[in-house]
Image (cartoon, rainbow, N blue to C red; front, side):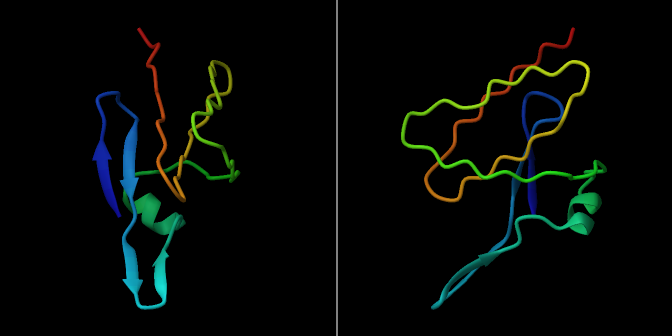
Length: 88
């Protein structure tokens, strides 16, 4: 996997290795050992799938008492994921 840091600390783009052949493609979306080796030490407890039509806005999250990480994945098309750092 390739990890690309962003301007906001703690925001990373994780690009998995995609293996393609005549049958299609395969990629590993999550592997606890691989993520730990990349420095992700948090326990991954939930996985959700959201299917949206074009131009849909979802999920405005503001977490103070129980912050949680978010893993966003685009299966088809593209995602515009906006992160705002409100820390002082």
